[in-house]
Structures are given as structure tokens and as C-alpha cells.
Amino acid sequence: MKVIIVGCGRLGVVLTQRLLLKKADITVVDSVKAAFTHLPPDFEGQTVEGDALNQDVLLRAGIDKADALVAVTNCDPLNAVVAHIARTVFNVPHVVVRNFDPKWRDLHEKFGFQVISSTSWGAQRIEELIENAEVRVVYSAGNGEVEIFEFEVPDSLAGKPLSEFVSDNCIPVSLTRAGKAVLPQLDMILEKDDMVQISATNAGAKKIYDRLAEEA
Ligand code: AMP
Image (cartoon, rainbow, N blue to C red; front, side, top):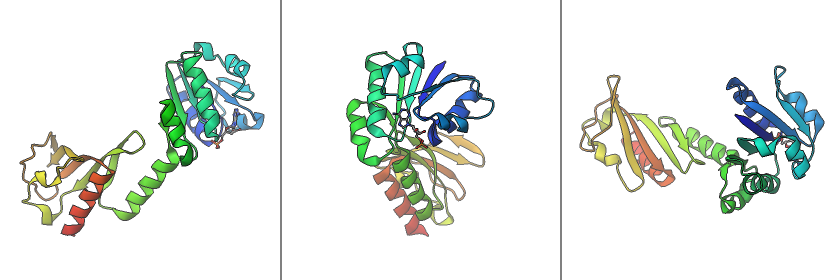
């Protein structure tokens, strides 16, 4: 798989390290030559120095043959334009954009890009961790609009039905009892130490936290 990474900064370098493990054919583009010094010493891919807004730079990076392009500079309008060119001019099959400043997120969504908004996602995760130590997020979809939460059933909830955790924005997805996981029936009665996983929106998550807090 040929991948072009535009922006050899903090995110671009970590992504390169990960994709190298998958043996991807990587080309990294950055307007600042010194940025390439942060690449891992065993990096054998191509580096292209230049402004990614310049189509010649993208062609030198092999955009016409790329399977994927990720635009991960620290400049949102630039990421949007590069991704737009990749998609509409060069028909790159997989295009992913970094949203650096949350105030630009709407722009990426209007373009319909797959967008990773690490600032908003990170803030949301930190808030969850400091407020709700007993509930863990085990999977986060999109930019955290829907997440799977996991918690251990406390003594006080034993004997109550799982249906207490069902609503428009909360759906139980698994229950593990004595090490064996099942797809939960909603009329199941909870037992102490059951491990419950629930898929929920932010509003649904608040209900889970509130319900557990009532029992604390
Ligand atoms: P970071 O914020 O650490 O992820 O770094 C972002 C990277 O994007 C830096 O290495 C910048 O030099 C790079 N960058 C910013 N603008 C451009 C551009 N127009 N073309 C290519 N790379 C860029």
C-alpha cells in the first residue's frame, strides 16, 4: 500500500512509525527540511520537501499512484485543500484529514472528509477519566460521538435488570460473567462483578454515569 503523509510533525512521525510496522510504502511531505530529522532512523521511504499546496510537490510524492493520503499538517485549511485535490483530481481511494483547531472542524465535515479531531477527542477522554474512574471507554467511533463504555457491576446493582441501562442513546453490547461473554438479553439480571459493555452517545454516557453514581 502506497501512503502519502503530508506533514512530518508530531502526528505525521508517529503515524509513519506505525505504518512502517505494516511494511507500507510511505512518502512523507513537509515544507521544512529539518522536519524529516524526526523520522525513525530505519525509515527507508521517500521524503519530499516542499509546500503541499503545490501540485508538483504532490506529484513528486507520487499522488497519482497513491492508495491513501493523510493530511496531518498543523494548518486546517491546508489539510482540507490537499485532501480535496487528492480526492477530486487524483482519485486517491483513502483520504484522511487531521483537524488541528476545533473551530475548523465544520469545514472538514462540509467537505465530507474522514476527519480525525485529536484535540476534541483528547479533551473528551480526559474529562471522562477525571470524572468517572469506574467507567472505562474501550472503543471510540468517529470523533467520540459514539463510544463503548465498560464497567463492573457493583454490589448495589446486583439483582437489577440490565434494561435499566437501555434508552434511545444507550445499547448494551456484551455482558461477561465469570470470564464468559454473551450478547446480553435485556431482561438479564445483573450479578456483582459482571462486566458490562454499553454503546452510548454522550447523552447516553451521562445516564450511565448518573445511574452508577446513584448506587455509589
Ligand atoms: P505538528 O503540528 O508537530 O504535527 O507539525 C505539523 C507539520 O506540518 C510541520 O512539520 C510543518 O512543517 C508541516 N507543514 C505545515 N505547513 C505545510 C505545508 N504547506 N506543506 C507541507 N508541510 C507543512
